[in-house]
Length: 270
Length: 228
Image (cartoon, rainbow over all chains, first blue to last red):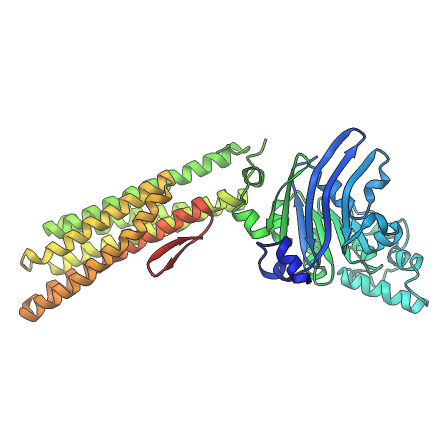
């Protein structure tokens, strides 16, 4: 089966850029438990390569938990148990070495979390431990190009040795994105990346997401309907641990098929 | 439909609907008065119809302003977005209906005291009755969110179009028979064209209602309506 056929199978309603892509990530019958409490129920979702997929839903609906299945971050929570199959390029993520997996599937969190090190070191750390640079010149190139792709180079090129934690919130978040892309990932998971940022910093991150999706598969969890509408090609709505509706972003925000989706995005929920 | 968590948003949508309903009433009255002017050659009423157009223009501006404020404040999505888009489209169609009714009244003023045979009016009367019915039906369809009724209006537009073509031929015969009828026939043909255009606006509103309710456009193929 060709990639395009795969895409047509999983995104039959996709239009524009979303219509010609392959499946990058796939959750099949995903059930997640925190101790005895089940928080995700039989979630099946295919995520297209090099496009932006937004996960939306009320707090506690399981969207961040589902996001964390893709890089096995749920394993860091002792009470959390994931059942079902989660695939990256058709391979079960459980069969992929977790260090390799997290290099291939980077993550950006709600609150920017730079290391308490220099701007340069924040970006250089990953490539260094993954052995991606043979020489310091190569490492310099990786740091520079990552900062450039994250839209931060111009603002920090003459202060590489200053602490990353000394940057503004928006700059710190872009530094975290630069840090994630420095190890050459295929997927970037973003868990409410703009919730702590002002509108200007948010616009910069959104502009960056637009650029990054040319090369990376992006999955973003957001509480902002407008942000989901602006940055994503596909949108998925979760409620009470269940995937309620997925579709082209335009369709979801103009003509959702499910009443729960309609009620949530129009503020009629609850 | 579940109500919005933000009550003020709910109230704004209700108010928007009421404004469209009021504007619809104004447009209907304006058209009915214009038809009266035409039938009775009532120049005083003609002046009133021409002046009353300002009221419809004001309504359109008021709706536009409210829509802009609602977009800024509420950033509407899904059905709410369609409600708001429908309101602005329908208000624009109703404003044009008001203009066209005013144009009909202006034609009567242009004909002035010239007398012309009553038979010239028969066809225009038939068209005006249908145009008024189309406008009334489509406004009813909007208030009831009744797509079946809206689609019926859409289909009936063909009848107005055919009436206009037939009237054109009829007037052509009259002016060939009697060149003194060129002036009144030309004015009346313009009035008929305005009725035909009012029918088109009713059709636009019918299409908007379909989009509002189903979130999908109506597509025309060989005069058959396909709901996507």
